[in-house]
Image (cartoon, rainbow, N blue to C red; front, side):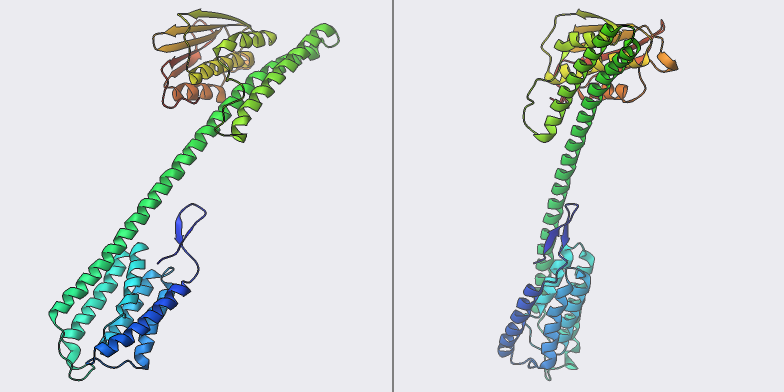
Length: 396
């Protein structure tokens, strides 16, 4: 049997070691079996040293069958053909050819294996039906044609079994590749989810901290009390950010376990308003339609979308007011975040980095959409439409 080892990429490869034990056992079997065949086939040439050399050579070449299956099967076939041409008795001499053919077919060298078998069969036809008059043993007669049917059936059986094994190995390889691709896809999706979470948490909190740090520095000497308030806000925002980052990283340390604290949702919208106010942004919120219980993934995505939109207003817009509208429509949750602009520093009020990309990815994962862009009256608007029915791609 062919030995296989698992490669670093998960694929099966032939073992680099030479198959000494199986080859030695096969050699002993062929030699012993040929001697038994000699006693039962009195009309054939007796086994001599040249016959033993051919038998041992036909088996020894199988040592390289894992690395060079084509060379092995042709060499074994050639040795068997010379053995038969010398008039030695039929017997296990065909066994090394069988092993070499099987190994070559399983290795994918199908045509070469068939060619070696065809070469041996045609050589046997020539020797058994035409050349026997000039070859040993003396006085030999033509072999019956019925014998060729048996030889052909033997060859077809060997190739059929080898093809079956090769097909099974290819099927197993495809299944392993499919499982590896699925695992890689799940890992990529998980990394993307964690990257989005970390971006949303850190971008929002660091924006608040940056604004409050500027306020604290400006008022440190003239208004220490207001500077103290700014530092308190920094402490609160950093504590909350650390808590959310820790919650995200817990999924890496203990995959599959439930998080220790619930994921944020629209019930924490007042906290976003308060944090935005500490950064100097006044946020007005309105809710239309009857509030519904949202799927966990939709609730988290809605919270992160509003959080990222307000963060972009703080970072990229000169507006000091923003409006957040939450609408519960039949089958969909509609979020609209507006600011009056203009962009600060000549940039885009909606942000131009990974924020909008992350919002669109979150909405697309739920089967929703994101529209973001400037409005004719000035300012910037983000509109998100999220289906309320759970989507197959939804991340809990």
